[in-house]
Structures are given as C-alpha cells and as structure tokens.
Length: 187
Image (cartoon, rainbow, N blue to C red):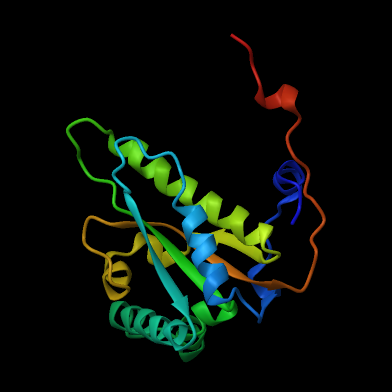
C-alpha cells in the first residue's frame, strides 16, 4: 500500500477508455464505499448516497438512459442510442454519488453539497489506494431530470458525480499543476 502522502501527491484520474476488468471485489468495494463515507459532514446528516452499477446492472442502467434519450428526441440516431446503452459498460464498476442536500434548520445546503463532493474525492483516493484506476465524470444524466428519475433518484436529489473504476491499462503522465504562487495568497 502506498504511503498516504505519496498516494495523494501522485493520484491521477484515469481515462474511462483505459479502465478494464477486473474491478474491485465485493470486499474492496465495501472498503471503498466505507472510506467514501468518512467525509466532513456538518450535522451528521449523511447528505449523500451511492448507487452502484456493476455486472448486468450497468447494461440495464444504460438501456434506461437510452430510453430517456429516445423519448426526448425521437430522431436520435441508432449510433447515439447504442453509445448510451454502453455508457456504464465502459468500466467494470460505476458508482453514482448522489447529493441529498436539502433545506435544513442549521446546516446550509452548500455545506451538504460539499460533503457529497468530498465523498467523490474519497472514493477516488480509496480506489487508487487499492491499485485501481478511477475517474470522476458528470455527463448529461447529471443535469437531466428524466435521466435522474430513470436511475432511481428522488426529485430533490442530484448526481454529484459518476465515478468509473477498474484496472487501468495506461499509467498517465502527470499533467501540469498550478504553481503555488498562482493559487495561494496570504492574508
């Protein structure tokens, strides 16, 4: 297992096209989701939940999204529908992190949303710590109410991200990062 600081300093998102089988085992997935749940959570609201797309569930979810697309645009091409059916088949595992942020007497919705984003980041880090490649994407279903409903979300819920996980076939070179002088000020 890599040193924590080394892991954080070198973690890199994989490209979806580079993620293949095997994906995490059931025990590894439990570990990943447990770590994803250990995020700052003002008020202990757990203002997020996870939808796991694995095995045949990936194809069923893609078919539902293709149906949503076909209903919204009857002239959509068969190629586009086929791509949609394969959306979640691009990696062995996809986890949707769903924000349940809602009005609260004490806890601002924005803090709840940030907790959900932190769950996405912890999920990425946990997958990397176990040796898997992962990437966080939003994609069109994030912003489409009918797509969210087709995936089982309540009307108030939003997708914070789809996290694609699998064995990375390519080790990506690090991209340029901002110089600290460009992003840090002192008050």
